[in-house]
Amino acid sequence: MEGRPVHVVTADGALRRALVARLERAPGLREFTSGEVDYASVQPGDVVISTPADCPPERAHELARTGAAVIILAAIPRPEEQRRYERAGVAAYIPMLIDGLDLVDAIRRHLPEAPAVGRTARRRNSRAAPHH
Image (cartoon, rainbow, N blue to C red; front, top):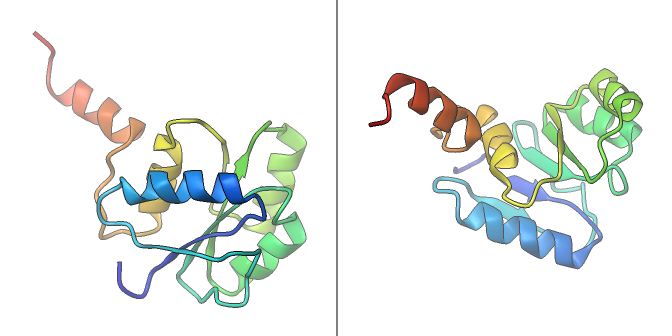
């Protein structure tokens, strides 16, 4: 999506590669990755994917205030942590799942020109068309 990059920002190289590989399989998404944690290139309208270890609520607030959609992937979701991130203005705080469908859906909600293809779309489609 021109002008709407997805930044995968984590110091964990293996996690970054896995996330980028998952995003590359999602049609219509354009990702930007950096070799290190780098928030300097984030612009208003961009999507930032990070973790609590790499993007504390204060940083998430700064990014959200500039107009970026921040998605936090939590390896172990914690209700209090989620509330802190929600108060900081993140677009989504979601569990870090292996298949990444919730992540792709969260990104697509902030890129309105891209159709949803993950769990939410499947649930909608399964309700619309009966299985025989």
